[in-house]
Length: 428
Image (cartoon, rainbow, N blue to C red; front, side, top):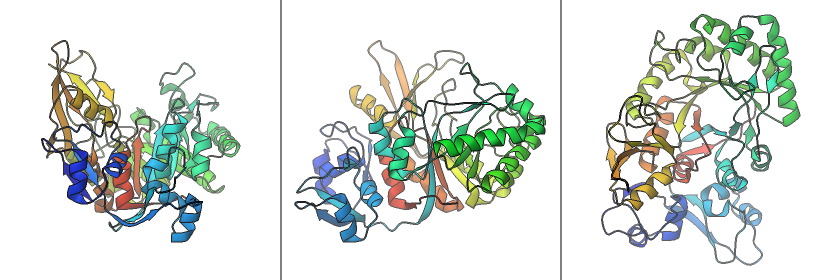
C-alpha cells in the first residue's frame, strides 16, 4: 500500500502507469467522481493486487469465490465497483487478494440514519461487523421509542453484518434529554422492565445486541450508570447478545465537563463487553477551524483508556466527515458546515484550491474563496489520515473501530481498513 500525493500536472492515467495498475481501479478504490481532474495535494490510495482474475463466460462471483477458496465477502470488499449490484461481466478484472499482509482481525461498527439509501448501504456494509441504526430513545417507564431504520436491517442481513440496537437519550419530540435516563438509573426497580423491553426488540428485529449511548450523564449518576450497563450485559449475555457502551473521549479520570464526568472508564469498561470511544469532534460545528480528530488528541485519549480498560475491549471512533468554516471564525457566529470527505475534495477542485497536509494532526486541509468573496477553511479526512488512525488499532492492541457515521460514504478509508485488517463476522 502506498499513499500518493498528487503533484501539478499529474493525471489518474499517469499515476496508474507509474505504479503499474489501472486508472479505473485507482478511481474505484478512491471514490473519485471525476477521474479526469485531480487536486494538487490530494492523497490517492494505491493498492497492489497479488492475484487477479479475468471474468469468463458464465462465471459468477460465487463460482470465482469457490475457484480460489476465497470468501465471497472478500471479493466484494476487494472490488468496490461490484458492490452496487453484485454483478460482474465477461472480461472484467477482479482482485482476488492484495500483496499487503493483513495485520490482525478487527471488529468494526458503523452508525446509520433511516434515510440512508440502499445503494449507499450496499457499498459500505460489507466492511462492517456491526451496524447501529440511530437511534432508539427511552422514557422514564423504560418504554422505548423506535427509530426509522429504513433499509439498514434488510441489507445488513444480506451481507452478514450484525445490526445493533442503538439507544440514546432522545425523547418523543426528537430532542435529547437526560432526565428520563437519570430517573431510570436512580430507580433500579425499573431495570428489569428496561431489560425485558430491550430483549423484545432484539429478538423481534434480529439485533445482535445493544449499543448504549447515554451522553451528558450527571456526575452523581456515574456509578449507577455503570451498574445499569453491567445489569444489561449480564442478562443479555445469557441470551447470546452483546453489550457495547459509548464513551466520551477522556484523558483522565477526573476530567471536568458535562460530557465527561458521568462516564467512569474503569467501571463502564468492566461492565460492558466492548466500549466505543468517540475519538472525534475536536474540530466541531461551533468551534474554531481544526482537524476533527487530530492524531495526538486521539492518542492522548487512548493512552488514558488503556490504563482503565483492557485494549481488547476498545473500539476506537473514527470520523467519516469534515467541516467547512467561513473565516474569520467568530465565537457564536455562523456554524461550520459538515461535509463528506469526497465533497471536500470536490470543493477544492471547484475553487482550484491546493490541499495541504498538517503533519502534527495528520489531517488534510485547504483554503478557498467563494463567489461572495468569503474565505473558507476546510478540514477533512483522506487515505493518509485514515492510515494514521487505523494504525493505532495495531499500536494499542485494540479490538477494532467504529465510524460516525455511514451517511457519508468513505470508500477510500474502507479500502485502507480492508488492506490492513481482517474484518471479522461477530459470534458471541
